[in-house]
Amino acid sequence: MSCDSFRRCVGWVSVSAWAVALFLGTGACWASDIYREQSEAPSATNFASLVRRISPAVVEVRGWGVPSEPRILDPEAGFPDPPSTRERQGAGVIVDAMVGLIVTANHLVASTTLVEVVLQDGRALNAAVLLRSERDDVALLRIEAASLRALTLENNGAVEVGEPVLAIGNPQDWGQSVTSGIVSALHRPCPGIANGDLIQSDVLVSQGSSGGALVNLQGKLVGVIVARRNGFAFAVPVDAVRRLFMAAQ
Image 1 (tube, rainbow, N blue to C red):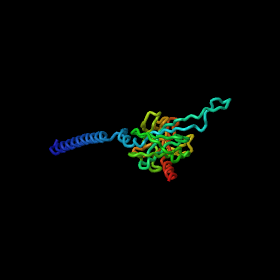
Image 2 (cartoon, helix red, strand yellow):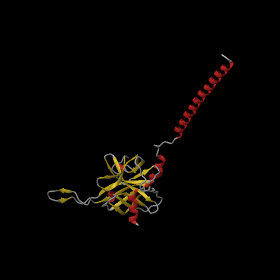
Image 3 (cartoon, one colour):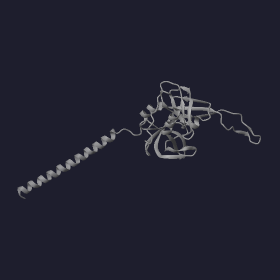
Image 4 (cartoon, helix red, strand yellow):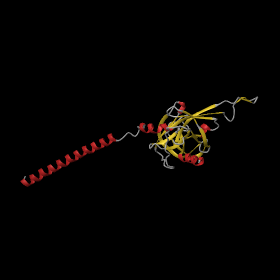
């Protein structure tokens, strides 16, 4: 082999070896970058700081009243039971801290003679029912208290299917509880509620969750929970809350 041929062969081997080393080295860099990006990414399932910030705006709501139709003790004789007070319990959301306005489910306070609100810090306060909407199944309450914290209402129509949401309420009268899920569907009806423009989500709710908050990951109120059916929660969108505000002015 001539000297020139030998030099060309050695040069080609050197270039090839450099290219392989560069590829392997670059691959290692890419792997390091991917690992670093994954390790630095925040956990999408840790809502602790968000819950600490928004949970003081969710309250317990209790209402006492006499049912409009008394239960018949002896149907043949037609003698009804004496009127007895019935208690209803659920949740509510502070939407104006300065005035003390709270939105809750209408069916919690309809036909009640006394409504009580229990704040997260334990304060129990009498509440006045300012306005009710049977169509939307929401009601507006007012309390007089200092150091309240309110939730901001999300813009109308800003909710999207698949969006993560949190539900905060008072299920089974256990005290404040938080569950998470996604928006499953929009513009859904639910039997018993005239408003057929409800938000359907798969958050876990139970008796006592009515009137609670459906909140997005920005901490804004997107709906008020009013019903559950077949494992899904149904919430009235915030435009119904705005309609209450306008009617109350």
